[in-house]
Length: 539
Image (cartoon, rainbow, N blue to C red):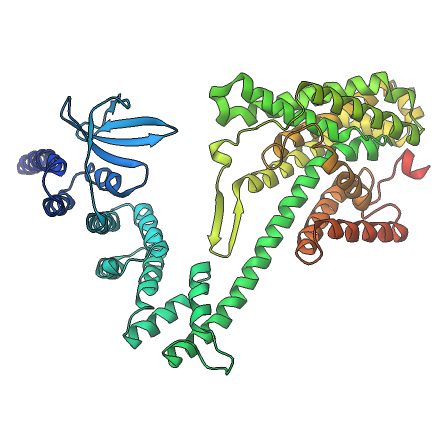
């Protein structure tokens, strides 16, 4: 019984305290709209001492570009106003509710000077660094390291001592080092160099580089040669770390490029590798998939975040049906004549390009959903965009699903049977003509899916498919005609090779080097990395 009474008393005390803070905030915040700068400084000091979640938005609005705190002289409401795209977005400071304002609304801005901005910035740092949420403290520490303020040194130092989360503690130490490196105290500068020597952030590397600079006589430019010597030693260690992380980043982007080539080449591995058709219109199947994504977003503007998920099956059907139509009308008359299929599909590609160009000659905008925006950063020397990570995962899923279709389904069994021995397959009752049509449609449909992914990293226009058709053929030939495992290794190998060659030779020369290598490799292994046995290969 006593425990229940204590709990109720504590609950009531908490409610009374919260109401007291709320009332104190409302009384104090209105004082911002009146008085001198000195009086406003006292108000900011008082607000920072109030434990109310509304304090932080008000202080931020005082100093952040595009924001402001205003008094509506008609209604006597204090508002936080943001100017965005020539429109005013306002919210009530007290209630937090949205308020409609226009250019004609009589608004009186709460003016602040540089002294008040520095004070507000310091109080914001204190509030955020005392937050129970470690992510808020980490963001605050990152901002402080980007814009070190010597006036906040004591605040940062106290927060660094009290911090328990290692990631936040390291970032606070870095922010402290950026301030102390300019100190006249040699001990502080020594400690700052030690901290900077553990970071690969570009700003930290830049500071160490400046400290280690020498003149023509080999003398350090810094006033303290002992600190400069330590900085030079730390710089060498940091540069080796940066080189490792940059190599890892290039490898990640090479694998990402390989995944893009894999998506573009998987469909070609079926139409060219399995069916023996040189399909020069494969790039246009990719283009159709990308344009399908654009039309999905155009038709359903409120579903942008879900547009890619809707576009994937839709693009597969659109490009797949186009592939079946091309096979039934043109390709089925040209089996066994690869050069004729090359010329015919090249003509089809020109027709499709011109048809799209007639509708819209310029590139079309495809919106990137929020969950694909941004980048993952391991540290200041290594990062990769989220869209490339998702495309890598997506390409592996597509490859796995295609392998399951070929190995575990009746359609896959019939495709392999027709590939290996068409007369025997026909004698077993398999309709090889329709198997050919469905195979060509499957390859074209996967190309459409590739177009959905590529719409997130490149321009969507009538000629977008031409940028990938040659690379796709190189992947298929290098990996082994018709072999999915070979297509995977071929795509990853070419992606890594292109990425590591580009910085030294340039994009064009790098592609030429890769092409020459593949030509020489095919002379040695005509069937590619992984040879597939079938009627086209055996013949």
